[in-house]
Length: 373
Image 1 (cartoon, rainbow, N blue to C red):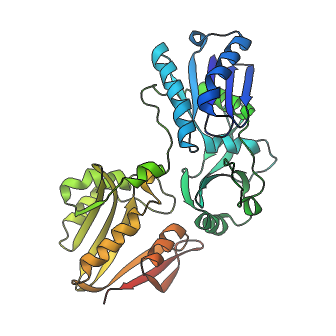
Image 2: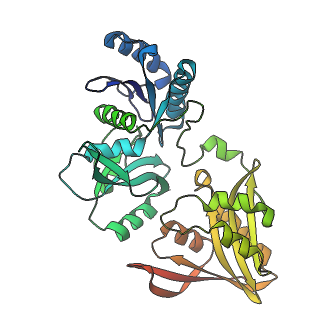
């Protein structure tokens, strides 16, 4: 096997020529990927004495990370794969970061954290395991997420306390204010890039060059600036749109099935409202409307649209929509779901009760209310 792997998700441009039992590695520190990638690639191929046509596959770090950097590396790999009719390998930057700790003598989960800027962090948790050949591999324990830093800390403390190995990457040239809490920044390891590429090749984790996509957990500021939400009530014909939101992975929630969703529409007191932008559903809120009060059943936002005000816009709209229909809105939320609790408090909800360990150990159900009159 012979694979060319690129990483442009961080500050360094990293290139690895990976074979079964050897590798050739090159990187350019603090580089502008658009300027340095091709000169560095040309030098790498010449020094390693290989041609593009010699490779069996191409690999690329697809994020999360720098929007521009990810696009550059991904575009190159997609072009090589398409032109040479070769498969491509997708590498998650959080998994790559976690490989910094894979050899540590520990059985604790690994939490990889990347500074996303604007008070946000990307994070994902992995577990160590033995591969088929006895090598140490990482298993995904949670899905990659982006959260406010305070929400992430609350989740980490309540779920893992001190029992976790944490690796943090600033990925930002500005002054880093998070290292006091998360430790010193540790960058991507080019040796880990080669190792992870080899493992994914041996496991057959390939995709088509046309199908590989960037792992964006939030939209860019430029994209977010032009978005405008339109909110309308859904009907049974919108079930595919609702399920597209329900079927996202979320460790703080249990998804509704298609059967449960269809059954809900048979109840005349059930109402669901969808938020649209650019022809795509971005979020939803569903309620049970009773005399003088309403209960929020579900609030869901498209992963790539989170932290852009979709949920708060939906709830603020819902409050105005219900103001002449009922006196108050109620809801129930997992006490560990810090992003949701923060959202509801921001929208005027207060805690009025608690059901201890309703969702499991150390996971209470918080009862919250918002008065409309």
